[in-house]
Length: 186
Image (cartoon, helix red, strand yellow):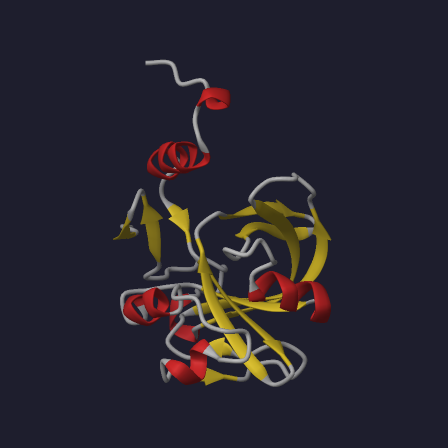
């Protein structure tokens, strides 16, 4: 079957792409605005370049067509902490996918533990084995339902026991595979 994307509606196109391009790492992004911590998962996330060290994440809009809190916070404050999801925090990550009002924190609402690693960045999720501390780099205008943004990685936290002297990293990350989640095998 040859699928012509111009003939597929947004929902069908999303379904086809998300069930084909697998696994997709989950960017569990923590942002902050006016003292309120926001945590939200995004599965349209990928490395883009190692020099400069940048990742791209595509962030949708709210039902009323305004930017999601994560995007609004990044554009305003220019900082984000991307945490990686593992089996220890998968259920917490799923909770943070629920929409909340901007003045309500997913971290507080769902009692998710965080730890501050670098003062000028939002905290990381404590149960994550690795986190990327990123600055806003640029926004890509697609005039669609999502806004891809490029974030530059400034620092990365990795649990000591998960990284070797040669920088080989072994994590228990969970990825999005179609509509489900899978643990990545070594």
